[in-house]
Image: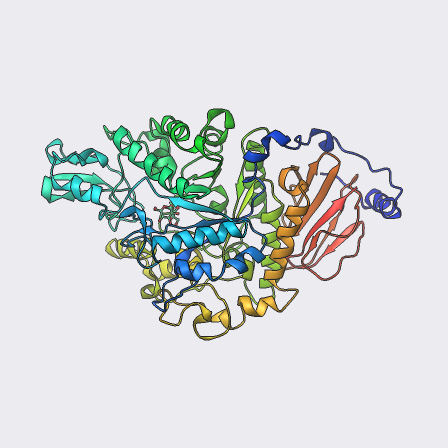
Length: 597
Ligand code: TEU
């Protein structure tokens, strides 16, 4: 993009004098029409800021070292004070915790570590009283091997539950290779001597895949979903939902997938048929949020999930952003994401915005329970830059089109713990990758080094409430070590500081609430080739805003493009002062959201 400082300066001066003839660009005319009043019921999830709570690490009320529902209830006023309006809880159901609740043994019960159904009812009531909606995790690609269905299924080939799972009888020979994410041998088939057959598990051996090709199984799932909706929950985040349908002849993975098994798994033969059935039988009957974890989903496939005309799901979240700076398909994630290319980052988010320009709706996130802390991964967590870069990333999340999914703890600017020893990890993914690499004679120290930046437990360390013992998380021994930086980085300290990351997050959620242009406005990338600064406009009818983000730890000047005229004080600024000028003098990690005329 071409721009000239002198022209921009003239426009700026005119604007500041209050008599500027702002050069309206065509963008304003192309802005999506504001949603009609008739649609109001359907759009609450577009205007939402979703706050993700990892219950195991949020707040422990009974001293067993594990977060629980009573602990979470005690923090609802805090959550409300953030200005978020939807809470997504990672799985809270009955589970032996092979994969921290993603292995469910009872879909209609609460995990013992977390409390009771009465606690859940109190939690739901407490949330609704505060105007907070609750989204639960729906984990139905697989169950636990300790689920009653699986116990029955594996007991005999004639069991009425046999076809609730995928079995391959040994007399048919060894089944075609399927890769497992968590298995120590990487093998997704496990041999079960009791009935002389293999069962399928895309994740751990204790997470057998459910057989969605069986209509009875599907009805069980729909009935379970209705059970939770009838209790009053407001939505589901659907774990690896693109993986549910399988070709039960289990052919070799076609060559066109070039070994990308995740992409193959996401293309089962009846996937969209089942999603439409689920919509018909369950989702259409409630005013709820539904979001797919879009593992294996490409840009070309995305609309098939969320085009409203197809009657499937509301939203999906993609993995392209998380892949920036990683070697694709590297199962051990050996390459630590150091400096990444901002150009690539901008390109990914700009392309994904475009997919939903006309229909459907997107999402944006920079961290979750499967990812390192966003400040470490995408910002700069050294003390001099930690707060500024956290605030910049928050600004990005809350000014993009699409619903932001904000991970609990990021509002404090929490950082990776960077364990030195494999034994400190609790995560099955890290531990089993290590064992696999060990068996293959791989480079273990390189692996441990890479996990310091990519390992999932970095995002799972307990929430840092205050500077007392164990960060105020528990009176017992925490299930996972607490980041020693809790003495400086904690909610209590940040409450008292108006310039903290925490209070900035509150200002950011308020800005998104106040200015609908930040939710619905058309997005246009500026200065695409700038490797340091990410800048874009948002436009909704006559309302227009400029977002300028210096994604580096150095100062950079950024000249206002021709035709853009500033229209007043910043809506958001992560530094104390702002001097309007034709070329903005950006501080390290400075983030600005400026109204335009
Ligand atoms: O993650 C699915 C998934 O694609 C994972 O393989 C993820 O990409 C990987 O763990 C990142 O390192 C979901 C859940 O979010 C995850 O916590 C579960 O472990 C997994 O499904 C199995 O249920």
